Length: 322
Image 1 (cartoon, one colour):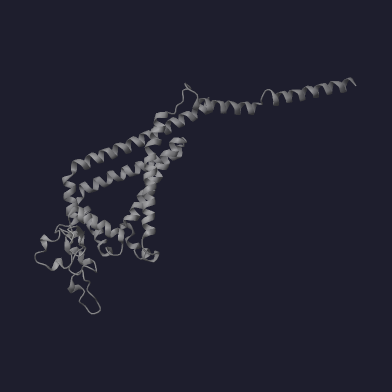
Image 2 (cartoon, rainbow, N blue to C red):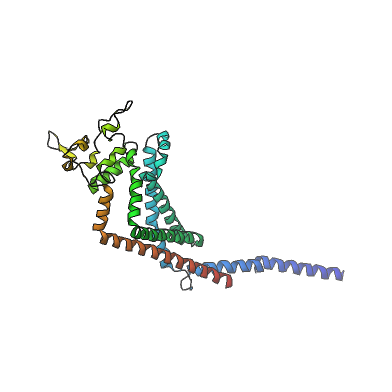
Protein backbone atom coordinates (compact mmCIF):
# COMPACT_ATOMS: atom_id res chain seq x y z
CA UNK A 1 0.00 0.00 0.00
CA UNK A 2 2.92 2.31 0.70
CA UNK A 3 4.35 1.70 -2.79
CA UNK A 4 0.96 2.30 -4.39
CA UNK A 5 0.61 5.51 -2.38
CA UNK A 6 4.03 6.72 -3.55
CA UNK A 7 3.19 6.00 -7.18
CA UNK A 8 -0.11 7.81 -6.86
CA UNK A 9 1.63 10.80 -5.27
CA UNK A 10 4.16 10.95 -8.15
CA UNK A 11 1.30 10.67 -10.67
CA UNK A 12 -0.52 13.52 -8.97
CA UNK A 13 2.66 15.65 -8.97
CA UNK A 14 3.25 14.91 -12.66
CA UNK A 15 -0.33 15.88 -13.53
CA UNK A 16 -0.02 18.98 -11.42
CA UNK A 17 3.18 19.93 -13.27
CA UNK A 18 1.53 19.38 -16.62
CA UNK A 19 -1.47 21.44 -15.64
CA UNK A 20 0.80 24.13 -14.27
CA UNK A 21 2.79 24.24 -17.50
CA UNK A 22 -0.39 24.33 -19.61
CA UNK A 23 -2.18 26.94 -17.54
CA UNK A 24 0.54 28.98 -15.90
CA UNK A 25 3.93 28.64 -17.66
CA UNK A 26 3.91 28.00 -21.45
CA UNK A 27 5.81 25.13 -23.06
CA UNK A 28 9.08 25.69 -24.89
CA UNK A 29 7.41 25.75 -28.31
CA UNK A 30 4.69 28.15 -27.15
CA UNK A 31 7.28 30.31 -25.40
CA UNK A 32 9.42 30.47 -28.57
CA UNK A 33 6.35 31.36 -30.64
CA UNK A 34 5.34 34.10 -28.21
CA UNK A 35 8.89 35.50 -28.30
CA UNK A 36 8.77 35.62 -32.13
CA UNK A 37 5.39 37.31 -32.19
CA UNK A 38 6.45 39.75 -29.51
CA UNK A 39 9.70 40.55 -31.28
CA UNK A 40 7.93 40.96 -34.64
CA UNK A 41 5.33 43.34 -33.23
CA UNK A 42 7.83 45.27 -31.15
CA UNK A 43 10.17 45.90 -34.08
CA UNK A 44 7.44 47.04 -36.36
CA UNK A 45 5.15 49.13 -34.24
CA UNK A 46 6.83 50.32 -31.06
CA UNK A 47 8.70 53.61 -31.11
CA UNK A 48 12.46 53.61 -30.74
CA UNK A 49 12.83 49.94 -31.57
CA UNK A 50 15.68 50.34 -34.08
CA UNK A 51 13.80 48.96 -37.08
CA UNK A 52 15.75 48.67 -40.33
CA UNK A 53 12.78 49.63 -42.54
CA UNK A 54 12.57 53.35 -43.33
CA UNK A 55 9.00 54.62 -43.21
CA UNK A 56 9.92 57.59 -45.41
CA UNK A 57 11.21 55.36 -48.21
CA UNK A 58 8.35 52.91 -47.81
CA UNK A 59 5.53 55.44 -48.07
CA UNK A 60 7.34 57.57 -50.65
CA UNK A 61 7.32 54.58 -53.02
CA UNK A 62 3.69 53.84 -52.15
CA UNK A 63 2.39 57.39 -52.69
CA UNK A 64 4.42 57.84 -55.86
CA UNK A 65 3.08 54.66 -57.44
CA UNK A 66 -0.54 55.30 -56.50
CA UNK A 67 -0.61 57.84 -59.33
CA UNK A 68 0.76 55.31 -61.86
CA UNK A 69 -1.64 52.66 -60.58
CA UNK A 70 -4.75 54.76 -61.25
CA UNK A 71 -3.29 56.30 -64.41
CA UNK A 72 -2.66 52.83 -65.85
CA UNK A 73 -6.13 51.70 -64.83
CA UNK A 74 -7.64 54.72 -66.63
CA UNK A 75 -5.67 53.94 -69.81
CA UNK A 76 -6.81 50.32 -69.72
CA UNK A 77 -10.43 51.42 -69.22
CA UNK A 78 -10.29 53.90 -72.11
CA UNK A 79 -8.56 51.41 -74.43
CA UNK A 80 -11.07 48.68 -73.57
CA UNK A 81 -14.03 50.99 -74.10
CA UNK A 82 -12.71 52.14 -77.48
CA UNK A 83 -12.19 48.54 -78.61
CA UNK A 84 -15.71 47.55 -77.54
CA UNK A 85 -17.15 50.67 -79.13
CA UNK A 86 -15.57 49.86 -82.49
CA UNK A 87 -17.10 47.86 -85.31
CA UNK A 88 -17.95 44.17 -85.18
CA UNK A 89 -15.53 41.49 -84.04
CA UNK A 90 -15.28 40.26 -87.63
CA UNK A 91 -13.94 43.60 -88.86
CA UNK A 92 -11.43 43.68 -85.99
CA UNK A 93 -10.10 40.30 -87.09
CA UNK A 94 -9.80 41.63 -90.63
CA UNK A 95 -7.64 44.48 -89.33
CA UNK A 96 -5.44 42.17 -87.25
CA UNK A 97 -2.52 42.83 -89.58
CA UNK A 98 -2.44 46.47 -88.49
CA UNK A 99 -2.97 45.73 -84.81
CA UNK A 100 0.39 47.28 -83.87
CA UNK A 101 -0.73 50.58 -85.45
CA UNK A 102 -4.10 50.65 -83.71
CA UNK A 103 -4.07 53.60 -81.26
CA UNK A 104 -6.45 51.84 -78.86
CA UNK A 105 -4.25 48.72 -78.74
CA UNK A 106 -1.18 50.85 -78.06
CA UNK A 107 -3.12 52.69 -75.36
CA UNK A 108 -4.25 49.40 -73.82
CA UNK A 109 -0.74 47.90 -73.76
CA UNK A 110 0.77 51.03 -72.20
CA UNK A 111 -2.06 51.06 -69.65
CA UNK A 112 -1.49 47.40 -68.70
CA UNK A 113 2.25 47.98 -68.25
CA UNK A 114 1.75 51.16 -66.21
CA UNK A 115 -0.96 49.53 -64.10
CA UNK A 116 1.23 46.49 -63.34
CA UNK A 117 4.27 48.61 -62.45
CA UNK A 118 2.16 50.81 -60.17
CA UNK A 119 0.59 47.73 -58.57
CA UNK A 120 3.99 46.16 -57.82
CA UNK A 121 5.27 49.44 -56.40
CA UNK A 122 2.22 50.09 -54.22
CA UNK A 123 1.66 46.59 -52.84
CA UNK A 124 5.35 45.75 -52.69
CA UNK A 125 6.15 48.79 -50.54
CA UNK A 126 3.02 48.68 -48.40
CA UNK A 127 3.28 44.96 -47.62
CA UNK A 128 7.08 44.96 -47.66
CA UNK A 129 7.09 42.22 -50.28
CA UNK A 130 10.58 41.76 -51.70
CA UNK A 131 9.35 39.77 -54.72
CA UNK A 132 7.06 42.57 -55.91
CA UNK A 133 9.76 45.15 -55.23
CA UNK A 134 12.21 43.11 -57.31
CA UNK A 135 9.71 42.91 -60.20
CA UNK A 136 9.07 46.66 -59.87
CA UNK A 137 12.76 47.60 -59.99
CA UNK A 138 13.47 45.10 -62.80
CA UNK A 139 10.69 46.46 -65.05
CA UNK A 140 11.85 50.03 -64.50
CA UNK A 141 15.39 48.94 -65.28
CA UNK A 142 14.29 47.26 -68.52
CA UNK A 143 12.35 50.35 -69.60
CA UNK A 144 15.32 52.57 -68.74
CA UNK A 145 17.66 50.34 -70.78
CA UNK A 146 15.30 50.35 -73.77
CA UNK A 147 15.15 54.14 -73.64
CA UNK A 148 18.94 54.38 -73.71
CA UNK A 149 19.16 51.90 -76.61
CA UNK A 150 16.48 53.82 -78.52
CA UNK A 151 18.29 57.13 -78.04
CA UNK A 152 21.58 55.62 -79.25
CA UNK A 153 19.88 54.15 -82.33
CA UNK A 154 18.17 57.44 -83.18
CA UNK A 155 21.38 59.41 -82.71
CA UNK A 156 23.75 57.18 -84.70
CA UNK A 157 21.28 55.72 -87.23
CA UNK A 158 18.86 58.57 -87.65
CA UNK A 159 18.37 58.20 -91.42
CA UNK A 160 17.66 54.47 -91.24
CA UNK A 161 15.39 54.99 -88.26
CA UNK A 162 13.36 57.67 -90.04
CA UNK A 163 13.15 55.44 -93.11
CA UNK A 164 11.84 52.59 -90.96
CA UNK A 165 9.28 54.90 -89.30
CA UNK A 166 8.16 56.20 -92.70
CA UNK A 167 7.74 52.68 -94.09
CA UNK A 168 5.76 51.65 -91.02
CA UNK A 169 3.52 54.71 -91.10
CA UNK A 170 2.69 54.19 -94.77
CA UNK A 171 0.79 51.10 -93.72
CA UNK A 172 -1.77 53.27 -91.94
CA UNK A 173 -2.82 55.17 -95.06
CA UNK A 174 -4.77 52.28 -96.69
CA UNK A 175 -6.69 51.80 -93.42
CA UNK A 176 -7.69 55.46 -93.07
CA UNK A 177 -11.39 54.83 -93.68
CA UNK A 178 -11.48 51.40 -92.03
CA UNK A 179 -10.56 52.38 -88.45
CA UNK A 180 -12.23 55.39 -86.86
CA UNK A 181 -9.60 55.74 -84.13
CA UNK A 182 -6.79 55.59 -86.66
CA UNK A 183 -8.59 58.13 -88.84
CA UNK A 184 -8.97 60.52 -85.92
CA UNK A 185 -5.31 60.08 -84.99
CA UNK A 186 -4.13 60.84 -88.55
CA UNK A 187 -6.39 63.90 -88.77
CA UNK A 188 -5.05 65.23 -85.45
CA UNK A 189 -1.43 64.76 -86.58
CA UNK A 190 -1.96 66.34 -90.03
CA UNK A 191 -3.89 69.28 -88.63
CA UNK A 192 -1.54 69.89 -85.72
CA UNK A 193 1.71 69.46 -87.66
CA UNK A 194 0.31 71.15 -90.81
CA UNK A 195 1.39 68.29 -93.02
CA UNK A 196 -0.10 65.86 -95.52
CA UNK A 197 0.82 62.22 -96.03
CA UNK A 198 4.08 60.65 -94.91
CA UNK A 199 6.40 62.18 -97.51
CA UNK A 200 3.81 64.36 -99.23
CA UNK A 201 0.22 64.52 -100.52
CA UNK A 202 0.84 61.87 -103.21
CA UNK A 203 1.17 59.24 -100.48
CA UNK A 204 -2.63 59.19 -100.41
CA UNK A 205 -2.58 57.27 -103.69
CA UNK A 206 -2.20 54.20 -101.46
CA UNK A 207 -5.78 54.69 -100.26
CA UNK A 208 -8.55 53.43 -102.54
CA UNK A 209 -10.69 56.48 -101.83
CA UNK A 210 -8.08 59.13 -102.64
CA UNK A 211 -6.01 57.47 -105.38
CA UNK A 212 -5.79 59.10 -108.79
CA UNK A 213 -8.46 58.45 -111.37
CA UNK A 214 -6.05 56.76 -113.79
CA UNK A 215 -5.44 54.09 -111.13
CA UNK A 216 -9.12 53.22 -110.87
CA UNK A 217 -10.15 53.58 -114.52
CA UNK A 218 -9.60 49.91 -115.31
CA UNK A 219 -12.68 47.78 -116.06
CA UNK A 220 -14.48 46.71 -112.92
CA UNK A 221 -13.04 49.52 -110.81
CA UNK A 222 -15.06 52.50 -109.64
CA UNK A 223 -13.51 55.83 -108.77
CA UNK A 224 -14.44 57.42 -105.49
CA UNK A 225 -15.79 61.00 -105.39
CA UNK A 226 -12.68 61.75 -103.32
CA UNK A 227 -10.30 60.54 -106.08
CA UNK A 228 -7.31 62.84 -106.74
CA UNK A 229 -7.95 64.34 -103.33
CA UNK A 230 -6.76 64.22 -99.74
CA UNK A 231 -8.48 64.14 -96.33
CA UNK A 232 -9.84 67.41 -94.98
CA UNK A 233 -7.03 67.51 -92.41
CA UNK A 234 -4.59 68.26 -95.24
CA UNK A 235 -6.43 71.47 -96.12
CA UNK A 236 -4.85 74.79 -95.24
CA UNK A 237 -8.31 76.22 -94.50
CA UNK A 238 -10.62 73.32 -93.56
CA UNK A 239 -13.30 75.61 -92.15
CA UNK A 240 -15.82 77.73 -94.01
CA UNK A 241 -18.56 80.17 -93.06
CA UNK A 242 -22.23 79.26 -93.16
CA UNK A 243 -25.13 81.63 -93.74
CA UNK A 244 -25.11 82.59 -90.06
CA UNK A 245 -21.41 83.50 -90.24
CA UNK A 246 -20.43 80.53 -88.11
CA UNK A 247 -17.42 78.37 -88.82
CA UNK A 248 -18.22 74.83 -89.94
CA UNK A 249 -15.86 72.03 -90.89
CA UNK A 250 -15.73 71.47 -94.65
CA UNK A 251 -14.90 67.76 -94.95
CA UNK A 252 -14.92 68.05 -98.76
CA UNK A 253 -12.24 70.72 -98.94
CA UNK A 254 -9.64 68.20 -100.11
CA UNK A 255 -11.65 66.78 -103.03
CA UNK A 256 -9.82 66.88 -106.40
CA UNK A 257 -7.11 69.13 -104.96
CA UNK A 258 -4.19 67.06 -106.26
CA UNK A 259 -5.30 67.47 -109.87
CA UNK A 260 -5.15 71.24 -109.56
CA UNK A 261 -1.98 73.03 -110.65
CA UNK A 262 -2.47 75.65 -107.94
CA UNK A 263 -3.14 73.25 -105.07
CA UNK A 264 -0.11 74.42 -103.07
CA UNK A 265 -2.18 77.12 -101.39
CA UNK A 266 -5.08 74.74 -100.72
CA UNK A 267 -3.36 71.75 -99.05
CA UNK A 268 -0.16 71.27 -97.07
CA UNK A 269 2.77 70.14 -99.21
CA UNK A 270 5.15 68.98 -96.50
CA UNK A 271 5.03 65.35 -95.43
CA UNK A 272 4.33 64.55 -91.80
CA UNK A 273 7.65 62.73 -91.34
CA UNK A 274 9.59 65.85 -92.30
CA UNK A 275 7.24 68.02 -90.24
CA UNK A 276 7.78 65.91 -87.13
CA UNK A 277 11.55 65.95 -87.70
CA UNK A 278 11.52 69.74 -88.03
CA UNK A 279 9.36 70.10 -84.92
CA UNK A 280 11.71 67.92 -82.85
CA UNK A 281 14.75 69.89 -84.00
CA UNK A 282 13.02 73.11 -82.98
CA UNK A 283 12.19 71.76 -79.51
CA UNK A 284 15.46 70.08 -78.52
CA UNK A 285 15.69 71.91 -75.19
CA UNK A 286 12.18 70.98 -73.91
CA UNK A 287 12.74 67.39 -75.07
CA UNK A 288 16.08 67.25 -73.29
CA UNK A 289 14.63 68.61 -70.05
CA UNK A 290 11.69 66.20 -70.20
CA UNK A 291 14.03 63.28 -70.87
CA UNK A 292 16.28 64.22 -67.94
CA UNK A 293 13.24 64.45 -65.62
CA UNK A 294 11.97 61.04 -66.74
CA UNK A 295 15.40 59.44 -66.29
CA UNK A 296 15.80 60.99 -62.82
CA UNK A 297 12.37 59.71 -61.76
CA UNK A 298 13.16 56.21 -63.02
CA UNK A 299 16.58 56.08 -61.37
CA UNK A 300 15.21 57.44 -58.09
CA UNK A 301 12.41 54.87 -58.10
CA UNK A 302 14.85 52.01 -58.76
CA UNK A 303 17.20 53.19 -55.98
CA UNK A 304 14.35 53.60 -53.49
CA UNK A 305 12.96 50.16 -54.31
CA UNK A 306 16.37 48.55 -53.91
CA UNK A 307 16.96 50.44 -50.64
CA UNK A 308 13.61 49.32 -49.23
CA UNK A 309 14.26 45.73 -50.32
CA UNK A 310 17.65 45.80 -48.57
CA UNK A 311 16.05 47.19 -45.40
CA UNK A 312 13.42 44.46 -45.40
CA UNK A 313 16.04 41.72 -45.81
CA UNK A 314 18.13 43.23 -42.99
CA UNK A 315 15.08 43.32 -40.74
CA UNK A 316 14.26 39.70 -41.50
CA UNK A 317 17.85 38.77 -40.66
CA UNK A 318 17.49 40.50 -37.28
CA UNK A 319 14.31 38.53 -36.55
CA UNK A 320 15.99 35.24 -37.41
CA UNK A 321 19.19 35.96 -35.44
CA UNK A 322 17.65 37.84 -32.53
